[in-house]
Image (cartoon, rainbow, N blue to C red; front, side):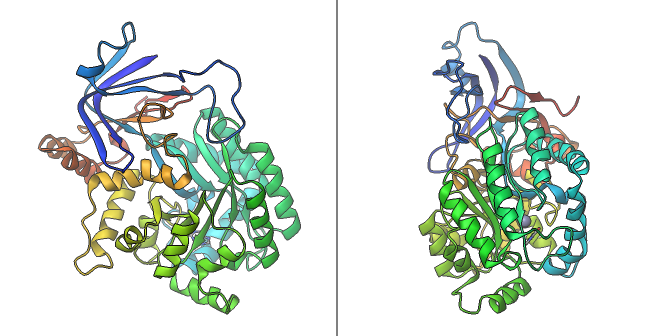
Length: 447
Ligand code: GUN
Ligand code: ZN
């Protein structure tokens, strides 16, 4: 066991922040761990360290005699961030300007993704990508690969070696896609099932069935994806929906009888718990009710939506209708791996809002969306995204003195919300002093 003394942030079951200005986090093997391999499920991982206790240092200091305490004065310990939607093969697509989503896909993204037929290239990008996640304090991610099965093997093999919690899937796209990324219907489903069996539940890894979006998947491919989703209920689903007005017009031409874009996924059995849909911008109340009723969740991707001019996620309506959501970078439509940049963009999106006055989202709520809220969206509450006892011990050590302006501003923070907001507005990877993974691997980005 090992303990860390610093300011400590976690969340209660209602998503409210729990804060100990002088806290103690005690981590160690799971109390029930026998060393025997656990069940082959992505939800319970055997052999990882968990939080054994969390709270005020003064309350806990005498409960763990003999345990080494690392004292980190002036630092904030917080849950590792969760990126709910990211494309690892688009690491080198960041910052590609386009009129909107569809020309961006055609001119930059598809040509670039075709390079991932080369496993060595995929491995090289995956290595860089995982390093970026970790450097920025992201310890769990739900990521697209490309349509090439080897792109999944490259990423998940490397993630396993690092001990990161990664969920990934081979992209399904058998139509309206150029040579080089278009797959073949029957083979794509055979490949998907083989990848599920190879990777899902291996250590901290998970698999996500990944239809790119309705326009790029034939009915037969969507049907096959839905059948796999029913056969493997623990496996995740990830896709895109209602992102951009031109995209939605196209979907309406392709499916004139569908009630809405989202309803197409429902028809094919692709809305359920553990289904994560990026964007969910141009929704009506019936769409949000469908998300709520099925347990599907939105990956809010504000830097991407601002960059591609897609629109603004409606936080007020999502909350009113009880739709689940969490935050995502959506690199490479998104512009940054930094959770701080994503949280700030989400704040801007709330301000613009759909309500008359706009919203001023609380800093702790922005933070929750990128940690415990994102875990809830994934069906991993109590596993990751939090530091309550029993959670896997993925955490970051943040340094509010990392830059002169951040140091000056955070020193004047009078309460938790002000401290978190100083980090959200002024922070970046320089504020991430250390990243600890439940698998035992630690990273000090400074070394
Ligand atoms: N819709 C279909 N594919 C993509 C993609 O790669 N990025 C984004 N932002 N939207 C998509
Ligand atoms: Zn995306």
